[in-house]
Length: 135
Image 1 (cartoon, rainbow, N blue to C red):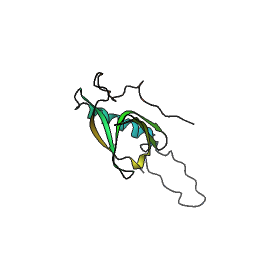
Image 2 (cartoon, helix red, strand yellow):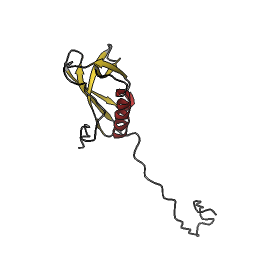
Image 3 (cartoon, one colour):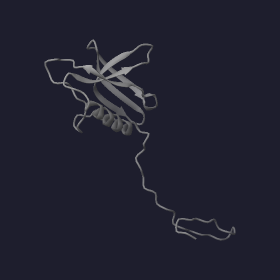
Image 4 (tube, one colour):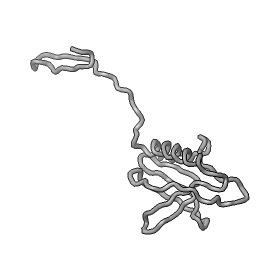
């Protein structure tokens, strides 16, 4: 019998014991924190293509209308909520909270909010990320 095989006793009175294989524990790929990491990476990759006059925006096509959001931060709340922080084109503060199964948006370049300052970049460093708020 191979090392990872397990056989049941052949008679009711027989008792066999065998070590079962040890499986490495992987992080839960369906946690919001894992989606958060991937979203940050994708946004950072998108930012590389932007010039000094543009920042990252998102276009949401639900809610019965198109909404453009200037993305300023992303957070999460495990197990399944992602939070997007930013402003509308009119400058109103907004926060979008979505279940990980519903995330769908279009990344786009938007004119920077303040032409006098450098564009805001999301390519987060660990200290700038919005962390999970555990309960």
